[in-house]
Length: 71
Image (cartoon, rainbow, N blue to C red; front, side, top):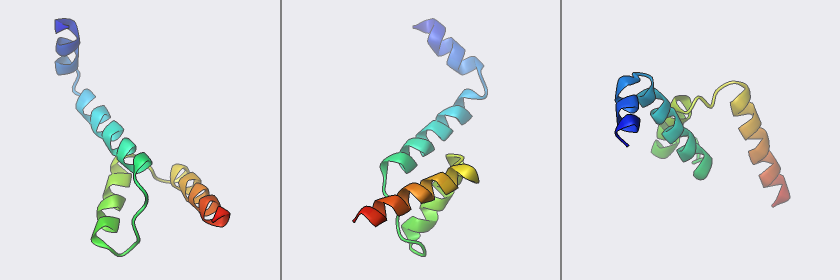
């Protein structure tokens, strides 16, 4: 157990990786709020932290459009 704790403390990139993982899980588990609202603006910041940009963002938009078409 001490080895794991020491490893985490010695790696400066571990905190960044943990932040990206946390932000990714938030964006994956929560529905996208409407644009223009306060939560919508906060969600956009979280998406950037989660690295949901470019092609990854396009894929998510296509998935959401498919869900709306089913309804």
